[in-house]
Structure formats: structure tokens, C-alpha cells
Image 1 (cartoon, helix red, strand yellow):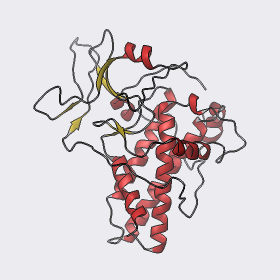
Image 2 (spheres, one colour):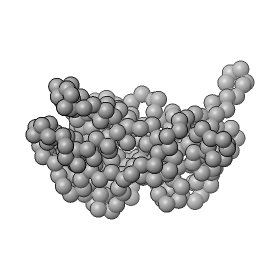
Image 3 (spheres, rainbow, N blue to C red):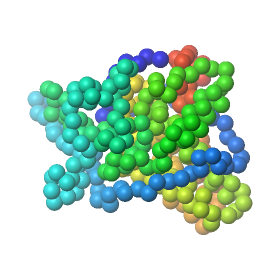
Length: 296
């Protein structure tokens, strides 16, 4: 895998087109929910005020500069800031690992307002290995070693046992976050499918699954910033998946079961596409497998 170091801003990352078009995917589907990790959802303290993430633009051809920042409505400018102020050079020196990835622990302000020497841009980015609430800087779900121990093998050797894979330490922050988030989402989709089969939508597990999908789809739920070119592709597929999860969570299956079932098919397909690509990206021969599965 090419471990060249690339930093992309949150807003740019969301806007770029996918490098690959995923169809199907390597993740297996089962017909019954698993209980190992469940769909435990940590309470979210997302601010109810409107948070806007913008970025400064580079000097244009007319020589003018547009400036912007990530702010939250507040009577105080300091209170309205999202993330801790840092410079890119500081982050590289303090948090970069041997692969060049900036990895900030969850207990050390993972969301940063990053400035770079020679530029007036302020980029708001998540440098942890989890999807976090950008306002509170905490994961949107339970984050534990047990979850990693269950999820990482599932997205690697369980899906394609004949392939060789990178280690957890070699995975990008976004890949790690997707291992955790997509594993919980898969559990939620299986629980949802089970509820549909039994026509029983009153269980706590089903309601927790809907809550997880709802929180994941919120704008404030920020995935790690891309630090590898193919992170952008994975982010694009994840954004598509979480958008469909949000639509599913907003529906009442008891009001229109047919429409809910149709939306469920879309969410499952979008999740499978992201999970399939994740398996490929975690393999040591990702370039070869990408050409084989997705074409040039």
C-alpha cells in the first residue's frame, strides 16, 4: 500500500467524486442479528445550534482572498469555535506516527482547527480513529478494544480468508473508524431485518439501531480526515451509506411497511458497497484487487 502523506479538509473530502465505483461488496450478509457487540449507542451531546463548516479559499486569479472558519452560533467568538487551534506542523511533530499519519487520542481534543504556514486557511478536521461529534469531540458510539477485536477480523480474514492483510497499526484513521462504525451499522441492519420479518418494531434493540443510524447521519458526526488518497473513495461511500441510514431512521415502518422495506434495501446495498471496499483497502495487495474487482 502506498503510504504517502496527504491531508484533505473535511469539506473538500465530502465534495470530491469517488475514484472507484463499488458494486456488491465483500461483506457477507446473515439473516439474524449477532449479539457480540450489539448496537450500543453512546448518548450524543451534539449542540442544537447550527454549526457551519467552511474553509478559506486559496488566492484566486484576481488576487482576492476569501476567508472563513468553522463557527457555532454564540454570543462569544471563542465559545463558538469548533475544535482546538493547532498548526499542521505542530500536529506532525507531536502526533505523526512512522507512516506519517497524524493520530490524536480521543482524550486529547481530536477535532482541531488547523492552520498552515503561508496560508490563511483554517481547516476543521478530526484526527482520531473514530467518528466523533464535532462539537463535543467524543465518539458517537461505544469505542472499546472488544469492538476492535470483533470488527477488524470480520472485515479482513472472515470476508476473504485467502488474502493477506495489513495490521491495525498500519490502517489509516478513516479505515479504523469505518471498521468500528460499519460493524455496528451491520448489526443494526440485521436487527432491522429481523424486526421486519417478525413485524415487531417495539424492541429496544430496534429502537437503538434507529437511534444509531439517526446520529450517524447528522452533519455534526464527523469522520476522520483523509490522510491517504483512497480514504477519499471510502469517505464518499460512507457518506452515501450514512445518508440512506438517516432516511431509514426517519421512517415509521408501521405506517408504510412497503416503503420502509424498499428503503432498507437501499441502505443495505450502500453499506455493502462501503464494507466491500473496506475489505479491499485493508489487504496488502489492494491495487491488484481493485483492478480485479472494480476495473481500471
